[in-house]
Length: 144
Image 1: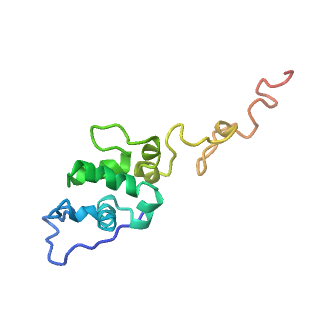
Image 2 (image 1 turned 180 degrees about the vertical axis):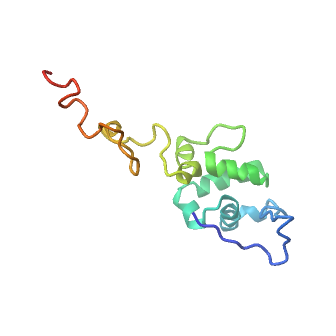
Image 3 (image 1 turned 90 degrees about the vertical axis):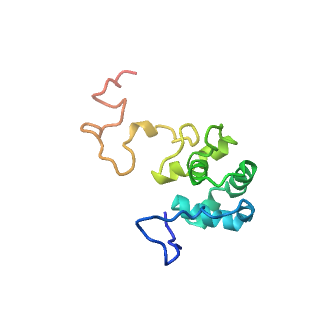
């Protein structure tokens, strides 16, 4: 993730800065401006948001609601749905930024591969005694 800090120089850090504040709905009608604002809110840069494949769909969803609420925009990008609504598609849920944030796949969206359950996840230590494959010698696998 990368965060661009395009805050105006005269903003008091104690007060904070809202990249959506002061935008008219018509200003967010431009896809590039919408993505710039969303990049500020989400912490992902514009190319990362485009890489989800959801830029146009999320832009249409936002325009349909005509709301400039930063919480709703964050929810849309991270969860794949406008708050209080179901995801607009299974793809919207699967491409939610929440999965990219902790480097995971949404449940049921990506097959982990045959036998993946028998091995420790990448970067994790294997539990004691896990050196022998399941079903092998000493684990009740003989005589099958």
